[in-house]
Every structure is written in C-alpha cells, then in structure tokens.
Length: 324
Image (cartoon, rainbow, N blue to C red; front, side):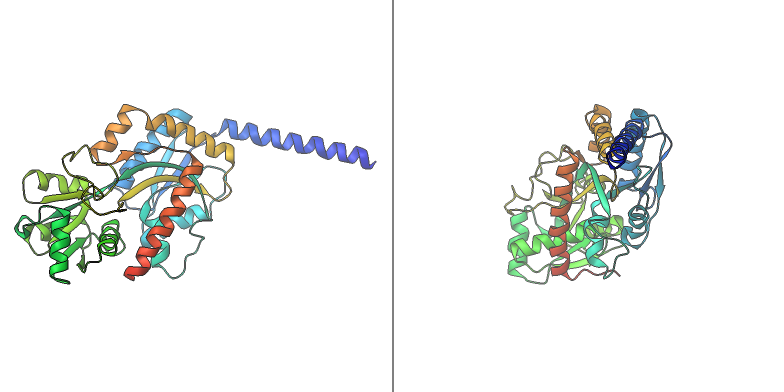
C-alpha cells in the first residue's frame, strides 16, 4: 500500500508540474493590468504605454495601463505587493518609488525589495546639469570652484524633495564636498523658470524639458548625469568626463511583478520585452524623450535594483530626506 501510494503521489506531482508549465506557456490568456504609480502624462506613463502596446502585440492579450498615483508611489506599489503572483497584475515604475520612497517614509505597508519580482530594466534616462548664463559658469569645474570659494551661496533647483534631481544634487555635493543650497519646486517647469530668470543658479533637470532652453541659449549645459553622452546633446560631457569621479544619476524605468511570480512567466515577459527593446521604433521613441534603451536579464536587473536601492538610501539618509 505504501509503495502504491508513493507512486500515486509521484504521478500526481508530475501532472501538477506539467499543468503548471502548460499554463505558463499559454500565458497570458486574459488581459493584464499594468499599474503605474504616477499620474497620466509623464515620462513613466508614456513609456509604460509603449511597453503595454508592444507586449499586447507580442503576447496576444491587452495590457491595460492603470495610473495609481499618490504617497510617493506607495499606493501603486502596494497594489502589486498584495496582488496574486499569476502575472495578470504587473508594476511599471520609475526609480523613485522603488529606491527613494522606501527611505523617505518611516513605515511601508510592504517589503521594499522582497515584495516584488524583478522582470526587466527597460530604459535609463539621464538628467542634465544646467546653469543660468549670468552665473558665468561654463563647466562643472567652474561650479565646483565657485561653490568652494563661497560655501552656501550658490543654489540648485529640483522638481521636489526626494526627486531624482534632488538626489543628483546631493550626490554631487557629497562627492565634491561642496555646500550648495537646495531649492525644491513642485515640478520641473517652475524650477526651470527660476533658473532662467536668475533666482536660482543651477539645476539637474530632465533632458527633454531643458533641451529647448539650451538650444535658445537661456540655459548653459554643464554635464549629462549618466555614463554615456546623450544623442540629444552629443557635445555635452558626462559628469565623469567633466571631472566628477563615480558620478552617475538619473532615473530608470522597469517592469516588476508581485513576489513569487513563476519563473516561466518572468521569462516569457522578459523575452517579449527583449524583442521590443531591439526595434528601431521603440529605440527612437526612447531617444525622443531623452532616454536610452537598457538591456539584461531578470537576474541582472535584480542586482541593479538592489544596488540602486542601497546607493540612494545612503544619499537620502545623508540628506535627511523625509516625506513631506
């Protein structure tokens, strides 16, 4: 009896695994909800919609974007953290809610790392350090020299406490050991207005929003914040080229699922995105919004995610960034 029972259990287990693999191979069999923890209209939302369209075409089911903004991205992320791990609710997020928000809020309703399954890093977007022409700053080293000569006098704008621009500014200050005063704004546009008018000296801004002002001469570009120059500003050096060792900042966009997402589902989504990221249409769309297409596996993204979480956690702690 015992031998027969063991054989029966073994057969049942094999059938269960086979059914599970078949289900993953058929995935998706119904529409997939893609949660974006931002309001509609921004760069994360627009990138998510490009990804949703591409995945729908490749996998044969609708991928429906749902914007769930609020609380620094926690509302959208909490939805996914508590979602079934079946692949029918996914998260498309920028870096901030994943790597800064957890350090800014004293208590999260989910595990900042463990509640999610990394699937794919889709794109990275640099910032550009720009200055008001009247400051006379032409290079990053001009800024470093001026800041060291007059500690606490120069100012830098950002599009909010805890934003990518704020963190870039604090990273710059920590590497160069300079004192530049942070002036937060509610968005990129009002910050740019005050840099252009001379109320603030410099700003780390989103590339595409600063580009028209650089082209018409109302802003001076000093450096790009990622490790490669941007095709939109090929003459502008990177921060590392400009003499700031180890500096790399900006934002990135990625696809994640709930904890425990089956490996086969992760692989299917990753492979479909690999095909998308290689298309000229998607690459051109990313360049148009100042981003560059990423590459890699779910495993490499998981390592990147953890490293970014730790890096910006240290900067957030050093700067005393807390939820407002």
